[in-house]
Amino acid sequence: MGYRTTTAMRIVRTGMVNFVRNAWLAIAAMAIMIITLTIILFSIIANATFGNTVQQITDKINISIYLKDTTTKAQTDRFVEGLKQLPNTENVTYLSKTDALKAYMEQNKDNQQLLAAINETDNPLPATIQVKPRDLNKLDDIRAYADNKENKKLQSDPMSDSGDRRQAIDKITHATNIMVRVGVGAVLVFALISVLIIFNTIQMAIFNRRDELQIMRLLGASTTYIRGPFVVETVIYGVLSAIISILIINAVFVTASSSLQATSFGLLDISYAQEFFGKYYWQLFGMQLTLGILIGAVSSTIATARYLKFKTPKK
Amino acid sequence: MILLDRVTKQYGKSPDAALDRISVHIEPKEFVVVVGQSGAGKSTLLKLLTREERPTSGKIIVGGIDYDKLPDKRIPLLRRKIGTVYQDFKLLPNRTVFENVAFALEIVGVSTKEINNTVPRVLDIVNLKDKAKRMPMELSGGERQRVAIARAIVRQPKILIADEPTGNLDPKHAWDVIAVLEKINRYGTTVLLTTHNQDIVNKLKRRVITIKNGKIASDRSSASYNDKKADRL
Image (cartoon, rainbow over all chains, first blue to last red):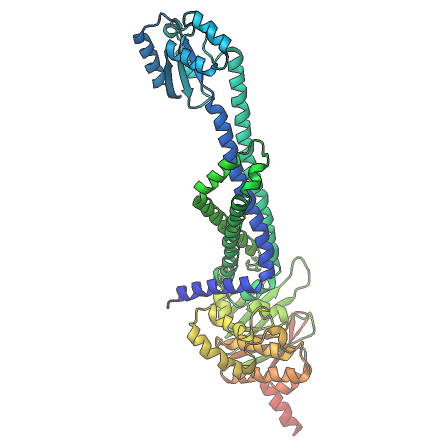
């Protein structure tokens, strides 16, 4: 067996032995790590769920363009095709006068008086083009196209995205944007605070063993040989913490789902959260593992650095 | 083997030098005792040799290595060539006696098989073969110091530096440790021992360098002991 393989195996073995021998320290550091990873995972799921709720609200927003009864099929087709070409158009639906009436009657099927009144007159509803935008923040191109001179002539009424409605849509869009940003910000802040706490815990753990590091240094051990076992040890913290953290979230969703469903969580749609967790289980677990390993390795690398310096100031 | 040429060491901005233009030459296989009161500069001298400290001026060459030309990253390699024994033992507290001694071999990549052969043999030299599985906390001061010696000699260094190895020991254990150092010297290792125990100095009858206020007050060769003995007869 080569020198490097022997050394690498020794580093890993020493790290594992240290993990067992320093069990209490390991438990303390892991407890913080588990809390951190669980908070981060929970924040991600909550953010995704919240984002989904926002999406559901914004999905219901579309722009209706009302056409004059004199508009020909060719004109309508050209108008629809033009709208479809716009980059921010997700889809375009055309409702003829008859379709619009059918939909209206369906919506008001319980209001007999209204239905009777409609039956007595000719169809008063205009044909409608409904445009679903991809991004609510970028409605200007759709507005501009619908309101150009040629298309404006075809419209019987101002389109739905105007006046008070336009303001309402803008407000919803603005509010949801802020909420998504706050969600992402909260995840980042949680992650940062947690990383600092873990770093401090690991640094304290290494501080307790600084004499050991200095003795190794005096005996001629290389930086890698001294630091390696500490990194291995903290990587073990990371792996175990990631596993325990995902099991905790798992347990919350699996065993406590019924009680969660019964609780009102406002904007948090628990069933979507469960679905999201199930769908991305392995990706989330992979992220937890990577995060745990990274936090452990980086913290121990930085925390050991100050004890591994050669105390030989230049002349 | 060891050469110090006009070496001065000053700590911080202190006007008094811990070592003041010291020049020493130690031949291979010599056993040299460095004596002096606390604060005389003995430990500073040894710290310069193990490169824990860097001299303010002067030249140090040990085993052919010129310290002026030694980059920091090569310091571990230098320390692997010198065995060091400290007054406070400096044993790894979470490792057994066997593991403490084996550590010195592990860091240079010696195979496990060879370690399993060598360590018991060295523990036998310091009479600790039966305590291989003990933790340092379970040993007496003298036993701990012998573990430290075993760790220092297991790589068969050409130079062994012992900084007050008997400082924390009662007379009986102190003599056990000195006996081990003499044995190692007989095998061909250059030994540099610091002590302020006059009894040890007198009975060892080796070259004695006395340091006083950072300067060499006397450098008496082992031959002078024999001369004195002859005079008395």
